[in-house]
Length: 607
Image (cartoon, rainbow, N blue to C red):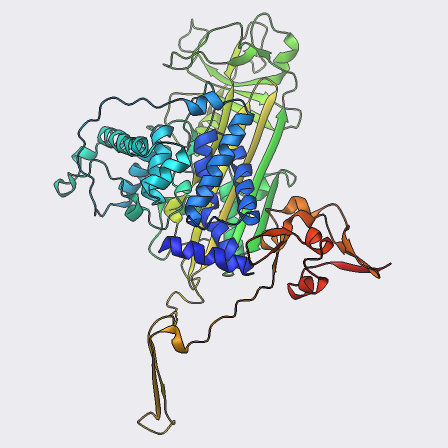
């Protein structure tokens, strides 16, 4: 069914329906981005490659021998490999998977009703899978592609693909059992590997169900957990908790657009909703040059809200880099970590970077502490505060602790000659979609519901300063003008009666149960024009600049686009061939009348 709908939309797009492709774009964008990110390990680049994939699909007709879904994943894989080849990492990609002998594995459960918290555990378990299993399971069980299609996309044999899925399920079982799934209710004791996420995550953009980031050091992934608000409870069992205010900004902007003081859900609030409603973070706490909020109306008159926060900070002086001179670890890890800071060989000029907020020694005779905080000063005036603590609290509580301990501290706050500082380099490249909000209806809005809440964060702390960029995309759509709307589609067998207003009986009756008496849509040989900058201005914004561009002239007139968009204004012919409108006009394949018919914007000037 889903495949048929995709091709129906794609064919409608080829027939000139611009909105049809936008629907396909919205459906697959995050999925393709997630798939590519699994391969290349770079969220930002995956975003760029995803745009390239859609541009290619726009300009190259889907092969007739395959489904839209299969074709777009095939293109995505090809683009990802091209990128890796360019980055000279082909060896990493071509490394062969080695599997031990197959082991018996308990049968999957076909129909299980799982509580919301169990869903969360399962999603996290899937994200912990090795990459070589993740995409195989993603394509077969979530995107519901066949083993054969998946094998071709992953460049694996059919047998190897089946092994990948089999092994992935086995690894999931281990992860779930470690998390205590074997202690569940006896009626669910067979829930050892729940991989039929087609039922569990039906309609959900899986790209948004996982937290994935790439602090890439020797190709190792370091997980983070992003919190929806500053006041969110931190789970002591999760690693590297993070919060940034871009989601709070989007939430408050949605409140503003809806004229509400808070947003509540039809079926009762989730913890994330309560957290965001109670958030005290606002755009007034930021310099207006450092954030951006844009609001667009969607096809259904819902809202697409994009928020971003960007900071580029520089310390007053560059700290010393200790990476090549020392073999220091972090916590209980045995890995050697890169550090920067100050030691007895450092210039005293660097000391002005630092203010000691408090330093509570481990004992009276110790120079060490497990409870201290410093402030790092920047040229831009922003402060970076580092707090060493063993406590498990939320960020709000941590910050209150810092304030209280700083107020109580009476010793010297200047960084002295004998003091030393050691800070690890920190890099975060993470993304999360708060999928618990997916398909949740907002109370008292006549059917407005969430379709996407995606947040990504890029953060880098080094000896020179700190870079932070974060974006949130929040999309809401209206199911209809009312949550109780009724779709009256006569697209299958139906009956027609005609009667006079005051009569009890009809004078005409007709049963329609096939297309013989239905009026067919006329097919013509006339070419069709597609202006991609109109379909998705954001995707093609690079073509919307550059001033006027002359794309054609005849004996009397010159014709100009208002920008340099000629490469993406294309004409499609019935045989599937296509070209730019500019070339087609010069070759005499079309006339200017066709541009007028499709309302292509241009300027006409007399010679």
